[in-house]
Length: 443
Image 1: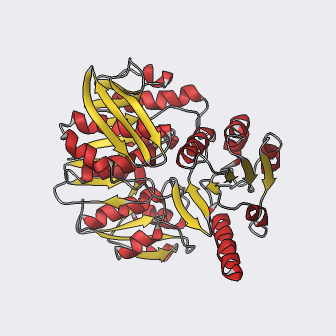
Image 2 (image 1 turned 90 degrees about the vertical axis):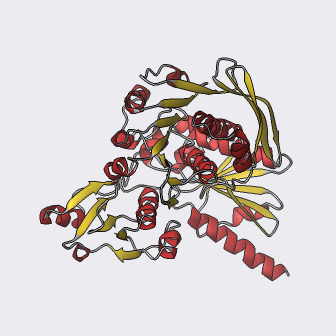
């Protein structure tokens, strides 16, 4: 790092960018950043750290800055363009991440789904045992003196994770996503194969994924799962309304029982991956067991609150596999309650590419509501609509608007899951305000 510069983040409110800014700040570097003025859920952590937040403005760029450019913005962005014209050092987010992890035992958590939850759990466990830097895709980041580990989310989008060469890699799954970039599932697998080639010490991969089973690497690959052919095998799994517990067997040796206050089968697998990595780094099993019990989740991943008798769950799920996992988790925690889903499709390309799979996963709920498709900065329009998806849904499929959330008021003492990677939270807030207002009125 360069202590003579100010690190200026273009797009500092992005989840990865805000986490990176917090790490640099913790390391004693001078940090500032620019972004849209609209409030985002990542903003609070930056404000509490005292990091200067500026509106986008070309005049933010001046001598003495090192610019870190968010991947959501092209080189035509006025701030990035000016920085390059001035000859300032400019890094893309993923390029700078590759520099940051050096000198630590680095663990990159990759996969089409489960990255953020697994990164958060791994960061929590290792931080409670040894000094650990971490960068989580929910906007959480921390740097500590003399860190032994660096835990980070390794995002496969546009092959950005290939800018890093970790000591260890966790691979939760290979699935087709980001159809605006990847040509096919084989193209996705190729990216993960390259990431495997760059991993320095060991890979921990979910054993039920046939594409992960096809990986080749110069380092050991340890598979985790429920099968007898998995190196780290969970058995005697118990899933209750309080969480999940299971024993772990490593190559015939019973490592004992572990418990996590998490729901859904996918969180058993995520926990197994964390146990496997920590065990391979000679972390004491009793300490791993202790830390797993105190994990309370990451932002926007199955975040729960109760309002007027309703259980409201906020979740980032925006792919059919993630939707299925989230509904499975809700069924485990609330087996006797009706579960409704309000889903905001994210990007036109993903919606049209995975239409039938979306319908199949959403139909696992008791009733489904949809919002309009959220268009990302990458694509503002497309030849598909939420109405097209609603026709394939058998469990409802009504379209909600922020101006009329009244259909949700038919529920009482039930569970409503708001799902999406766009601005689904504005629908959620409107519903919560409606509930609170009616509660006060009735009292």
